[in-house]
Amino acid sequence: MAIPLTADRLLTALRNEGLRVVEHRDWRTHNRNHKGPFGPVHGVMIHHTVTEGTQQSVELCYNGHSSLPGPLCHGVIAKDGTVYLVGNGRTNHAGLGDDDVLRAVIDERELPSDNEANTDGNRHFYGFECVNLGDGKDPWPAAQLEAIEKAAAAICRAYGWGAASTIGHLEWQPGKVDPRGFSMDTMRARIKARLGRPAGSTTTPIPIEEDDVSAMEVLTYRNEAADKRSVEETGQRIPDFYGYVVQTHGLARTLAAQVGALTATVTTLAEGGGLDAAEIQAAAEAGARAALAELGDALTNEDQEA
Ligand SMILES: [Zn+2]
Image (cartoon, rainbow, N blue to C red; front, side, top):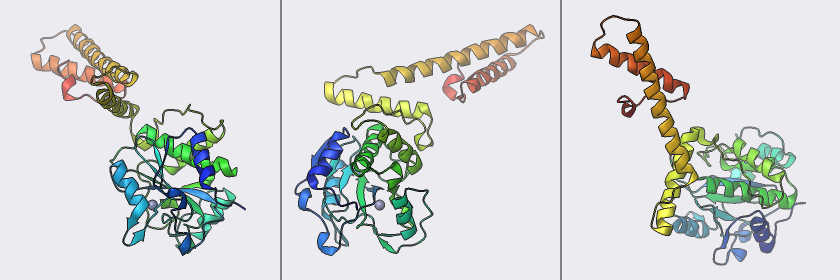
């Protein structure tokens, strides 16, 4: 029977997985145990907060609000990947969910759709609230996704569970949409890979397939974040790997557009005939477009001068 981890064991499991953990106030004794049982525990549930700002989100999850008293989870996962522990024991995060889902989690098999709200989830799940507006636009930084992976893996490892013991709130309770912005299947694949390695391993593959965004969008986002960090920490922009890749990609597509345009223009000229400037321009643009298509890029206005 899976009994709840003590505060010390929970903290140790998270730290051993390589997480930066902050103990918020009296989290060790902060819970909703006077309202109902916690345990046997069967899994880990991931949420988004619909808030922004680390301190504000941590306070909200610790205190709760008038209609939903805190703690609202066990740990808050900030955008920088830090985990703030706010509760230990029963917490108000899961609400009523589907008993078919609970059985699937216990058996670690594929989840049925959640179409009933008949089972007390706060009794059976650890909960992590992840700081995100949940609007589908607020980004999920790589450090935060890695922390979600590590936090879930830490608890699964402590109990000897597999990745199938981690679910999203949206998979538990009808009408819930959290977490929004990455897929739980992808996250479970990452947790599974992590559980295949020793605790604390840092070699996580770059989650290029996350969020339906292109590799360049991911790299551009990371470059902006790295620039911001370097300015904050050192007062200057320090060139980094992401910046190099983003610049190199920009240069490659400019060159491809120029070469494509030249090739098309020369070919058209070689076919003879008196071409006017507009026809040469059209041939060049068509050539640039074709060259960029091979890179998987669209021709933008800035390239048309190329
Ligand atoms: Zn939720």
